[in-house]
Image (tube, rainbow, N blue to C red; front, side, top):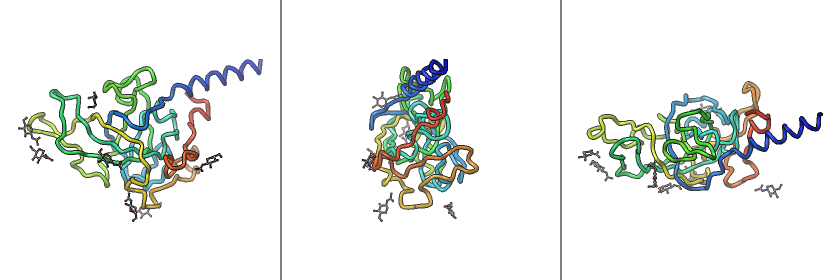
Length: 217
Ligand SMILES: *[C@@H]1O[C@H](CO)[C@@H](O)[C@H](O)[C@H]1NC(C)=O
Ligand SMILES: *[C@@H]1O[C@H](CO)[C@@H](O)[C@H](O)[C@H]1NC(C)=O
Ligand SMILES: *[C@@H]1O[C@H](CO)[C@@H](O)[C@H](O)[C@H]1NC(C)=O
Ligand SMILES: *[C@@H]1O[C@H](CO)[C@@H](O)[C@H](O)[C@H]1NC(C)=O
Ligand SMILES: *[C@@H]1O[C@H](CO)[C@@H](O)[C@H](O)[C@H]1NC(C)=O
Ligand SMILES: *[C@@H]1O[C@H](CO)[C@@H](O)[C@H](O)[C@H]1NC(C)=O
Ligand SMILES: *[C@@H]1O[C@H](CO)[C@@H](O)[C@H](O)[C@H]1NC(C)=O
């Protein structure tokens, strides 16, 4: 009986692990933005001073955990605005806007919304990853998102098509600020934290999946 239960547990956890999205190191994704308070400790458990530099939450199935830290934690991406596709006609900026973000937070999987992609279904922008940029931000200009209020009647398109590349965190604005790197001690957090400085340079530092480790769905 015990053996039977164990094999069920193993089956379930391997089924769960295989549902994470393995994304290529460059491609297209969608980008939204959200308000992350300064000095907040996001899901990965990165130090509060990481909020002083560009950070983003990643959609759950690409992030790799349903709670706390996941394999995406700490990794850095160069994101470049391509177009705002929810408006008609599509808006193409006449300036190139890029930002290197560090993933510090989880954008939970929901039944609908931009963080809903799964291995079998992209989001409404045809993307398998959504980056939820922490913006406004002390380190990203307030006019980062171009727009044309004359033509569209408002300035915040909300959702963008972006191109992304996995990059070394050495090009992240917080890299030279040691107080912005690392993770908080687990006491007081309720779970261990995992926020590697640069997993692209040391893959051994890649975080495990908290939800796989704890058999959570
Ligand atoms: C990010 O992408 C932009 C646009 O392609 C490019 O100009 C910039 O050099 C890239 N930055 C990094 C750090 O890769
Ligand atoms: C973008 O368009 C605006 C308005 O037409 C113009 O003022 C601005 O110079 C353009 N920027 C570039 C980089 O072409
Ligand atoms: C995003 O841009 C790429 C490259 O132009 C394009 O192939 C793709 O269809 C765009 N996606 C959306 C949702 O506009
Ligand atoms: C906004 O759109 C209008 C109408 O298409 C165009 O004439 C104007 O140059 C655009 N302005 C910017 C800042 O892109
Ligand atoms: C970090 O400091 C080095 C040495 O001064 C500099 O070359 C590099 O551009 C800085 N990196 C960032 C992301 O500011
Ligand atoms: C975070 O940065 C502030 C300055 O903005 C500094 O006063 C504070 O000591 C830093 N905290 C930590 C834990 O590094
Ligand atoms: C990663 O771990 C492997 C096996 O323990 C080791 O051989 C390798 O040197 C490590 N790589 C780095 C960059 O630390």
